[in-house]
Length: 88
Image 1 (tube, rainbow, N blue to C red):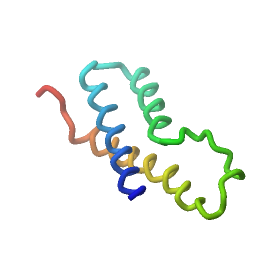
Image 2: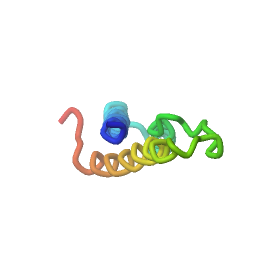
Image 3: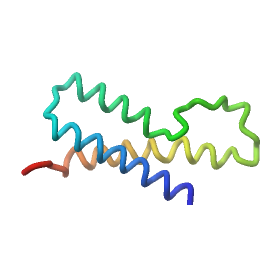
Image 4: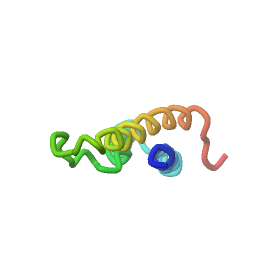
């Protein structure tokens, strides 16, 4: 269930990022800043946990929640950049 929610989170962040960029018609510097901020937000725990404080029994779930949304965000961002056009 966590992996499914993480994929949904990554896709949602990528979609909203692309929608914002298409809607506002921003320049290249703003695109870099927006994609950087969105990549940071795509990790639901924002990297705020120290890895050595995570118990062994939940380490796999922690890695899933940390990695899957970011990878999904990257893939979805590339797909949306090539196939998504807002407003005709």
